[in-house]
Image (cartoon, rainbow, N blue to C red; front, side, top):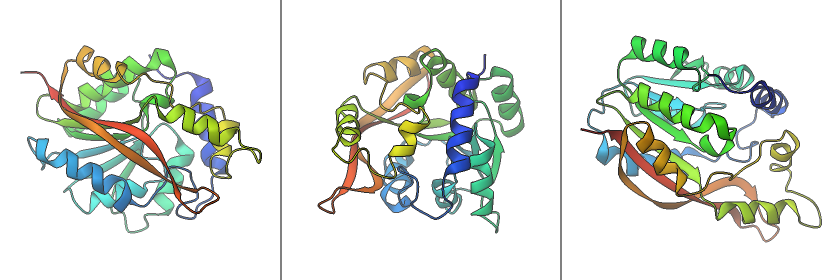
Length: 241
């Protein structure tokens, strides 16, 4: 099973349109505000930090490059070829490697695991954007990449983020400029119930080792100058013994 063509085409269109400059995409906040805090939550639960790290749904690679300074081998993977074009152009020194991957396609994920072996996986804001029929398959793919020794750090918008986003979209001026393309391309956010996320992991054979809540910072600001933050949950999981 692979993702629907509608979903793939929506992301290609989004990334083809996206500006190249840092911070131009709604969720592309500086790593010190995103991957950095997530890594502090993730690292205590890594059974083997020397494993390759896969940044799944890497987009334009902002967080991938940060992670590549902290792990011996980092691979950014994304469904969108246009996103990976952004990532490679922004990384002329080749800090990380990048590859197109449909994480809901079993054969593709198994082939990557056969190449890399067990991996640690970082996933930020991917599950809630998937079509409902693809969500368990995506998590199953992550479990394949994790194998026996890896860990996954999964960060997702919580249900409380949806009214925040809808409020922003429904303002008198319409959605903020960086949020507008998300809605225009049909990338509906915050559609996964909080309680469903650990169940997806458990169904894939992964045990939740730690979890909590933390705001997901964006690159957009309110009229009063405060940065827009979205409620999110984080979970660290690994193979059940």
